[in-house]
Image (cartoon, rainbow, N blue to C red; front, side, top):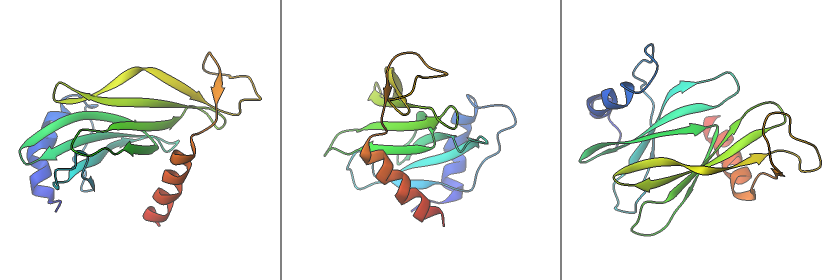
Length: 151
């Protein structure tokens, strides 16, 4: 179970890498990432006007800062007994966004170099280069679940 006092013990490690004015949040979303029956936590430490947030990801027992994930919509590709990939979509404009992959390596998550422009494939991209892709259905479903959760 999430306890604010527990998180306050490990959050300063993440805040060293965050903007100076970041305050310790009192909110965390629990998810058992690696299937060990112990929750890890997504903590929103900074949110922008377009809905994108920077999420610090933590394990509490033992305490470990797993790094940052950026985006509005987060999808965890669950697998048994291993750290899953995390996919995060973030808005870049009203019509365009980016889908990034975070992979667990050497004790923490790292963003992968490959990313996908998300937009209407019939239109040209304004901000990014390369081809546009439709939003994957799993992320559309995740977004709907997040909207319901936040109500």
